[in-house]
Length: 77
Image 1 (cartoon, rainbow, N blue to C red):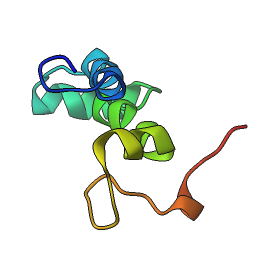
Image 2: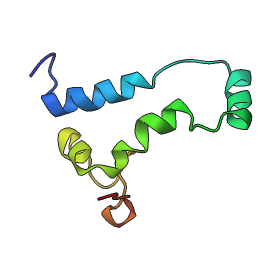
Image 3: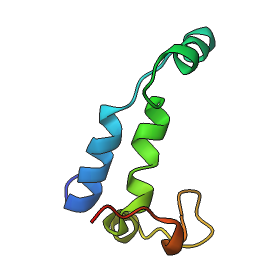
């Protein structure tokens, strides 16, 4: 434990911090129209919502904001 977070929690927090940032509404609208990449909030939250280790690390359960039913989670391997 460091600062009250476990190793797996720190991993996922670090992952999300890579994508943090701020921009004005006009900039966000421009990027949604012109940038082929997903917005940072989507890049930070959607991938982890498919990983069981994320659910285990934070105790995510049905009804929580980031919960996704197991049959709806994407698996590559």
